[in-house]
Length: 497
Image (cartoon, rainbow, N blue to C red; front, side):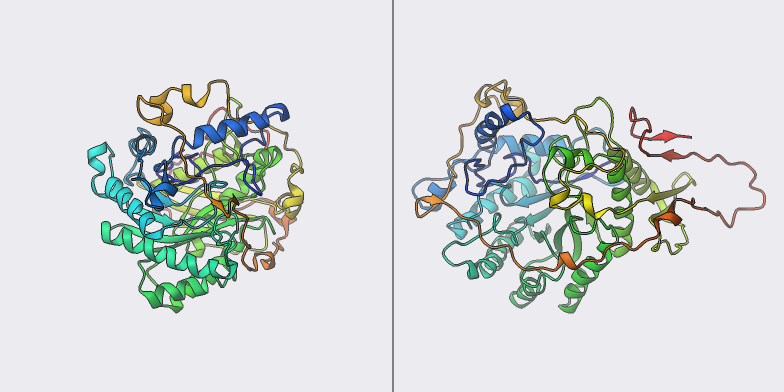
């Protein structure tokens, strides 16, 4: 796929310090069984509880936090995944592989703040020592050089303080400060940021006030991260509004050098079998390419697609061929990883559905990307979970196989050692009951602009003019890779002409 930069998020237990995946939790959000037949969904949920909870880093966090026990570490699953990721034989080109390591928990993995922040930071210190300082001792090809602290704290199912919801925001700021200072003291050279804000546009608590807190408290801060799912408008051009807002707040506080990462993005965010097909379709392919081009032009430094495998929201399904979205992602990465200099003279395509970019690569070849996308807001929101775009057929998808019990799986493959670890004991109750969700904090993502492009004009074609060709140059070849509904999917290159 040409991917050289991964984020450790939703790796199903792996890389999480004290997560406890709990399908019986209050307001459980199911993002693991939507592709499965209805008669196996409950079985999959029970299986996930057993399997995911054997792969976390600490197996007894509550007991450690309360000083009843020393920490019981379970490093091997995370070691194995990081080693495989950082030594992938398909990495090519000048850029070395990178892991953005997320400090936090997975969805349904625990929403209450750690009950002992000081001891949580001790676990973070151990983690950073292992993966950034002594990485070579466990066989990592490269150290972990970037840490993202938490995920979507503006949503009450990722961060809450039930005893006083109004304290939740400030307590997150203090939590970030403690963890960031711990990481900086342990490995001063690594990059640190937060916080994967879900709905970032005009979200004062997790943009304006969070950045001001960091400035006033002199907290380590190398990047700000946020998410963007196009669930309100289906419009990739919204990234200009969002990025301008975030960048202006960073610059206001003197953070001109702080980078902006989008650590999750996709066409839609609602889990359903139809949406999984939608995210793999030619419609998603056009959105994906258009968004990446606009995001770079808007000043975004990195964008991590959610997600690039065969799980829910993934680029791939259980068919024996590529998806159109995977083809678009591959072609973009081929373009981006081999370009030497940008050469396209930008024309105003904002009033059409066409987006373009171009470059010359190291082999003196001209590469041009053109996306022709039509925004349809009716397919991306909550009400669009059951609506397929015109011409898109429902695709068969992967779902979790429960045939082999979690304690009988190939331990080397799934747990990184010859011993199957026990289930963790990280479940946290509040007053003897499951922890309730907190509030979702105010934002104005629903005020982002709808695309007013003239899509009829988009369908008339696009003219590319190549200028400044030397007079003695008289031989050239044009190769066109085209991704479209009905095109071949046996390779990632699309239809080639």
